[in-house]
Image (cartoon, rainbow, N blue to C red; front, side, top):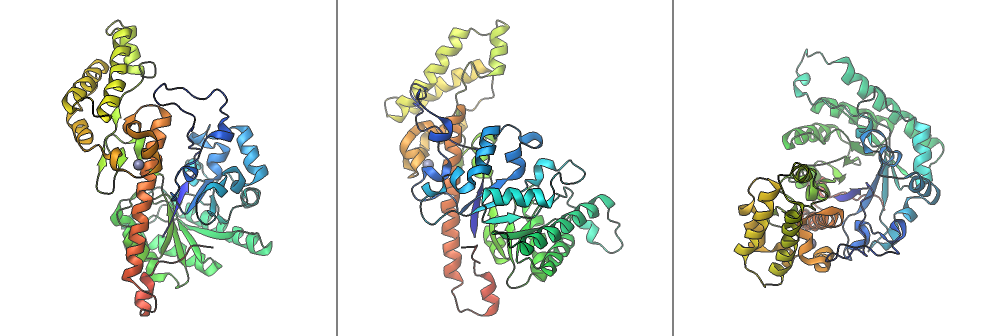
Amino acid sequence: MKYFLPDSQDLVDPSFDFDRERRSTTRLRQRDDLYAHEIFKDGVCDGLLVSKGIVDGFGATGGRYTLAQRQRLLRTGAPDFFRIENAPGAKLPIMGDCGAFTYVNEEVPPYSVDEVTEFYLDCRFDFGISVDHVILAYRPEFDEPGASIPEELRKRQDVTLELARQFLAKQQGERLPFTPLGVAQGWSPKSYAHSTRELQKMGYRYIAVGGMVPLKTPDILASLEAIDSIRGKDTRLHLLGVTRTEQLGAFARMGVASFDSTSPLRQAFKDDKDNYYTPTRTYTAIRIPQVEGNPKLQKRIMAGKVSQEKARELEKGCMVAMRRFDAGEVDLESTLDVLQRYDELCDVAERREVYREVLADRPWKSCPCDVCRTIGHHVILFRGAERNRRRGFHNTWVFYKELQRDVEAAAIAAPRGASSRNARTRLPEVGT
Ligand SMILES: [Zn+2]
């Protein structure tokens, strides 16, 4: 099972000085900043996923790429743009898709098959996913006999299948140099199976299953089971945008050869509590917001309820306390006291007990990843993009290591040469 890390231009500045919070004056973002796959000596993913919607800045994703970056990507191709030669091991394959979630609210996809294939060729992708339209409703009751299925759902599925047909015809007719994936969209187990059957009939042998992002694990499993019941032996699946990763073993048994997920990265700074991964549990990061970058606190300062100097003093006190705690110079309770005083001033809910857990365990001390080894306790501070993104990279690395371990265990459990039923549980290879 291969893990593709979706791109959204998450880079970190290696010149960033964490103690002084300064950058090198000679730093050039596009030349010097690093992607996750350039940071870890032992790898952090099996491939990258690049979405046209994000590159174009469609919908709410605008602003990830500047015009100059977009032009450079199209001119040099994705392997150069992402400097994949810096990733350890075999060459990282790059998969392209349209980023259907960026245009989910449009009536029809905003891209033609010609536009998309041109984008894939310019980017020199190894895999290209057909143009699709997400169906946001999951309604298994429509599988009951006699249920009437809303026109809107059928239309999105029909559009997706028709675009897949055109996409494959173009790819095969012009012998375009990437492996094509057709997208299966559905609203229920049977409708996902229907899409898959149609795509197989067209000739697809690698099928991306879309629309799974908001689904709960039992719904994903039910849909995959239905797909599995009609899946050809040589058909592999890619799960688009997985947030439920606890059932990856079951997914693999049902033909899932690859998937992508931004969850480990995003949770570092989007989640209320699960910000820092370890192999056994997650921890909450220590929030020390900058006085200047905290709108709620700024409002209180403007209203004269809080003194700006006092706020700055407490903020700085937290940074010093964390540094000294990490060095073993101050104890747990007095560190918690300092953090609590700043929290009270910022008027946020009591976090002393969750902070006690993470400070008592000091998980960053025992993490062998390149981020934690390099920046130490700064990885656990919820503060600014340089720290938060690195914590996201750490999470992705922890997640990937766990995945590799699971894949290895599954491979041992289902050795080659087993019966055909067992052969199904073997993990399929993705590309070369
Ligand atoms: Zn780490």
